[in-house]
Length: 83
Image 1 (cartoon, one colour):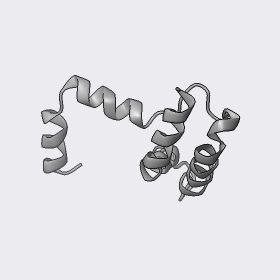
Image 2 (cartoon, helix red, strand yellow; image 1 turned 180 degrees about the vertical axis):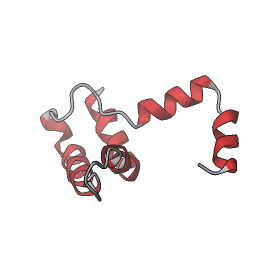
Image 3 (cartoon, rainbow, N blue to C red; image 1 turned 120 degrees about the vertical axis):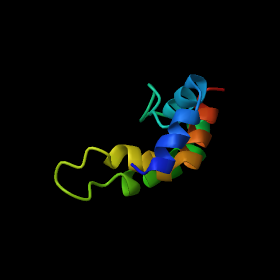
C-alpha cells in the first residue's frame, strides 16, 4: 500500500469505511431475485461471474475485485430487491 493510499484511508471516518464495506458486500438474498428485478439481477450476476475469476491459485481477492468492477450493477440489484 502506498503512503498516499494509507493517508486516504486514515482520512475516512468510520461511517465512510462502513459504507464502503457494505457497498462491496453481497446481500443476504444473493443469488436470488424477485421476478420484477430480473432485468437488473441478470446483468449483475453476469458481471460478477466474469470479473471475479481467480487470476492465480489462492487468489483470495477475486470476489472483492469482481464486486469493485460491478458496483454499479450491484447497486441496481440491491435497490430493486430492497423495494
